[in-house]
Image (cartoon, rainbow, N blue to C red):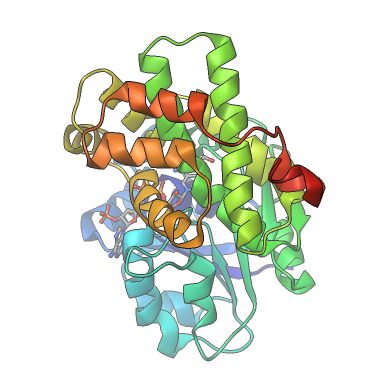
Length: 342
Ligand SMILES: NC(=O)C1=CN([C@@H]2O[C@H](COP(=O)(O)OP(=O)(O)OC[C@H]3O[C@@H](n4cnc5c(N)ncnc54)[C@H](OP(=O)(O)O)[C@@H]3O)[C@@H](O)[C@H]2O)C=CC1
Ligand SMILES: O=C(CO)COP(=O)(O)O
């Protein structure tokens, strides 16, 4: 069945998703606020700022008319950075109807209060058909046809099946999960650890060290997520360990690059400016460390990174917090109660 879909956001991820769905013969409009970019995509089939090496399907329609794009669609993907997500969703709320499906692809927290993007979507009074898409999905790799897997998470089967129908392709495979909280938290939290790994890479650490950091990152983010209702097993899937590996090891990850630039002597502000695209991990770090303190959750890597980025602590204190911390069990977040506080 041919669907009409709207993707909100003109960045790299929104563009690759819109392009896959147009290639799958669905009617796709991509909303963006920049008129010049709309014109460029419609005239040349290129989004030169965000995805310069990917020719786009000729039926993909870029638009700055938000109202028309929403009214004409049965499925809406929101690919807007977390900082502006709530504001854009408030604009579309009056246009939503109970049959529309809403999907967040954004990996971050609302900077105004501790909540996820799906919480923002759920506040609309019209539709509760909501899902989150997450996984090791570096947009620039997807754009050139690298084999990629992703996860659609929603308790609602109709939502999961719709997203699979829209996005599946010979190079893009979508898996299902009902643990929406776990999948969404995994996607947001891994950005913190991608920054840590970028820093570590700049310090030229060995592979033992890198594996230890990535694995302890997985333990730390799972511990946090389990506290907020996630299934720890979700973290063994693509949205958890999968995305952690991709973003903690790839220079295509903006969060990893933030860490690498800081480790190479740049300030946080210089690193963000040089990248010129969203690096969600910085806001996520602020929100998560505050929440971890409030709930007494042990997160030495996140706390150490927060001190380094926001309080100008030395790098050694980040390493020190991992090496001398109180946690002594390997996978305590997923094992028996008696192992938790040994
Ligand atoms: N890129 C990737 O590999 C992946 C990204 N994601 C997630 O997807 C989300 C979007 O990322 P990505 O596409 O990469 O981001 P980019 O930085 O590439 O682009 C952000 C887009 O959002 C637009 N935007 C920002 N604020 C507003 C606003 N107030 N109103 C309208 N448009 C706005 C920008 O418009 P303008 O150009 O006019 O500023 C730009 O088109 C992020 O949360 C990211 O974590 C998830 C998986 C992979
Ligand atoms: O989430 C991503 C890949 O899965 C993209 O990571 P960055 O936002 O760090 O580029």
